[in-house]
Length: 239
Image (cartoon, rainbow, N blue to C red; front, top):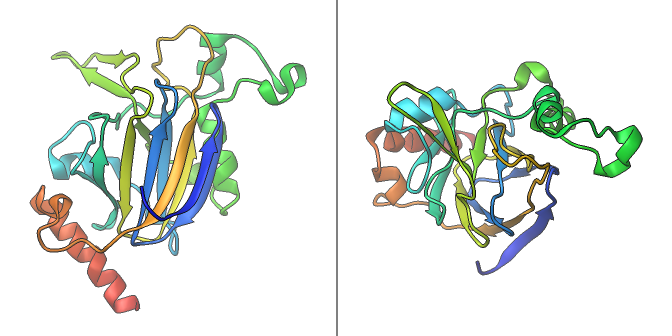
């Protein structure tokens, strides 16, 4: 990526939040392989508008995310478009880990014993970051799990694919809306690794040209074109 305006690394089991403005692209890079990034999205100006998993999936006739699909809000607009993706599959349905899941899988390792190396979980990390922006547990909605692959068989049984993402794999999200982005790098709730071993991820942000009429994400589905037009109209009326 050229002309990076912001870059940081989230350690394994870490968390991050900030507002990314419309017209910028966030690149997430798996540094070691096997990463998982839990993601929540909210309209930075009106956080009652947030990422909507059902609309994202049914509108695009998909079960997973990759390029050139989009991330829909619950008000018929777009948060972001996936403009590049070397991973090819990102989980949309499995939610995040919590204290009970982590304790059952990896054992007890509280802060009082391990200090900053205590075992973290996705739900608590989300809520810590959400609190910084005036949000709470009632604002917690189904999240994305980037870099993780989960498939379903004919009976609906879910299967986690270990080591799906490799070191150096990345995902580019072009933001169509001013968006509060909340992330954590805790392990996927279905991760089959018997050890507590969350992986780090690098974040990079660049400025991006506005999508044109032939943009691949806009034209990938009629629903994406309508949602992108709704988003453009939203900002035209606010400018």
